[in-house]
Amino acid sequence: MKRFLFLLVATLIASGFAQTNLEGRVLRVGSDTTYPPFEMVNDQGETVGFDVDVVSAICEVINCVPEFITTAWDGIFPALANGEFDMVASGVSITAERDEIVDFSDPYLVVGQSITTRVEDAALTQDDFTSEGSRLTLGAQLGTTNAQLGQELVGDARMRLYDTFNAAVLALLNGDVDGVIIDDTTADAFVQQYSGDLIVEIRGLTSDPLGLVFQEGDPLQDAFNEGLAVILADGTMDELKLKWFAPEE
Image 1: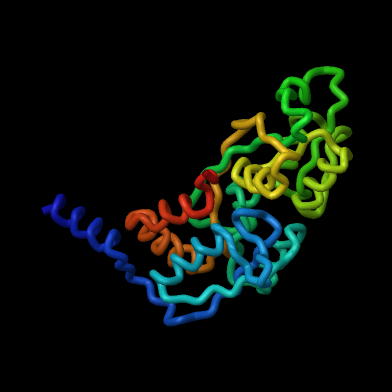
Image 2: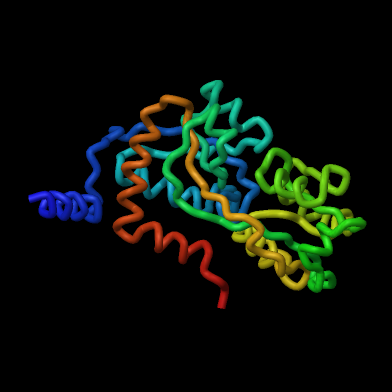
């Protein structure tokens, strides 16, 4: 009997069944839309990306409508706490420190951290940045786990913090920093954007699980975990990963 019930539940999940129905509720989703391929604004002024598609797919399961609102990363969590958004989807790493002030969904992706350099500096290694006496500098976005790791690797004196990763990458291209520490999937997106100028040879520094973010105690957390389980089971998540992370041929 127990095996039958387990198989029944698994079948219901895989077929897209979910008990939660938000009855078409419009959800305001805060997002720093400068972080390809997770969220960005295309030439038509539309917010697109992996996180956008993940939230939209979950909303199809639990019957809600996401409305993405562009906001600066610095202050995104206080804005959530103040009720400016119903949730945040912005490539957010799950950390114990953040979990004290917000609630996270179950992890939906694990990303590695890497160091992007200019093509002419492709021979640089992690040791070149971290060895005693090194003068190489790293850039990152303010308030990110990438910045925290960078400070651990090279110290505050050799870290340069920027409001966005776009600004950090431009600083790299201009020679203001020697590398940018960033999630590998986003590093690959910037390498593609600036083809021939940037390269990622230093990978696997750490692995970070990503989660969707809610106010503490918000029942939306349970609803989205339910919907997330469905899109993980029915193959939708795998399709989205192929769409946004598959290498260009």
